[in-house]
Image 1 (cartoon, rainbow, N blue to C red):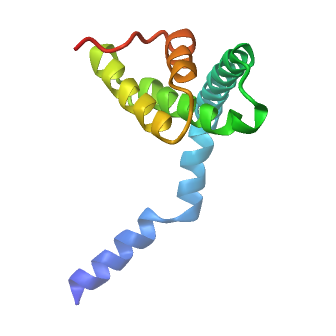
Image 2: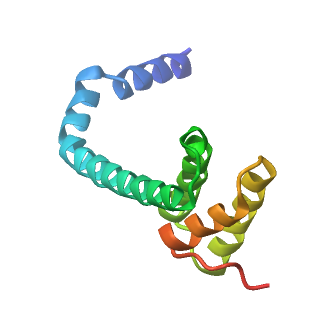
Length: 123
């Protein structure tokens, strides 16, 4: 029974709400700065994507899937930190996926190159 009692005590100590609050309070400013920076990057990326869509004459009803494509590219580059030829290959896979869903591959390729500066993958 001592093992069970120790586990319960350890859990109770680990999840002490005052301790958790103190940790979060200490980290809050850095977390806020990180969130603000990421939000600014995403909004800029989406604005650039909308400019490409406007120039390509894409109907506004189709903006959502194109923005989803751009957000997936963003996640690959910023969150998962994929780069180089691996990023180009992953971007091509995403382009093929969204083209299969009915989006224009030329517009997708334009987003890939103009917004994310990714060239077509080297075979």
